[in-house]
Amino acid sequence: MKIIGSSNARVGLPLGMAVLRKGGSALDAVELAIRAVESNPLDHTVGLGGLPNLLGTVELDASIMDGTTRAAGAIGGVHRFEHPISIARRVMQELPHAFLVGEGAERFARECGFEEVDLLTEEALEMYARGLRQGGVEAPFADAVLRALVGRLATQPDRVSGKEAGKDAGTVNVLALDQHGNLAAGVSTSGFAWKYPGRVGDSAVIGAGNYCDSRYGAAACTGRGEMAIRASTAHTVVTHLRSGAGPQESGRRAMSDLSDFADPYFSSMNCVVLAPDGNHAAFSTLETATYVYMDSQSKDVQEEPRTHVPWLAGA
Ligand code: GLY
Image (cartoon, rainbow, N blue to C red):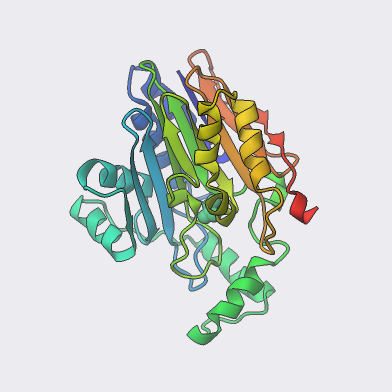
């Protein structure tokens, strides 16, 4: 039994581990752990309290994957629902689809009985407005200027990103291995702060920010989602695991693939990896990033440094 995640998964891991200790499924553990992060208003990168898009609307992406069946569910660009991870799971389980976006995803969430809530907290609204001011932008602004604004805000030196405080950038990753040898992976995010409306990141893209196969391992990403989409990072990690490399080598190779990608908006890239034998590893382009985990013996959440894989294109 093992559960690992990005450092902001700390609030959810004990709940996930409790599921695993009772003989519950890796999928249940992942969903429950992520729901706790989605409900944490102090986390400005996931769910309630997440930073909004350029127009001030909190817009969420999430995905979940069952490593045993390789079934997956994902939603992108969803407003007003606190638990996108649970909606993604319902997509996986109840529809002949793997990925819903926008209005259709919201319609499906309502049909499933998920409650609509206001996700924009006062603190997140203040951070959003402060970001606009620092970028020299005054809301409301004309739609015609959005294209220019998104670039300007994305390059602000102190925007919320992986550079801030050396943390792995926002978004939550949780990977779990249950008593029966099943792996599951989940990712949830409010995405790139001040993003262009409709932008969907890697968290909702199976293969980019999330991939899981109980035979070989699971991987998930945080950070600059466009990078993980360009390099199919999570699937690449699992492909290396499949070829016989261990979690440390597989993650390092996948991260190295994107180290020379040019990107003027680069913040950081990070991934976590869990093998079917419970071995795990985590990586970051930041020097001081950490990740968290628990196993069957853990009393508390353990935190470890990630392996540093520099982003050479920006060095
Ligand atoms: N990795 C989360 C995002 O780019 O939206």
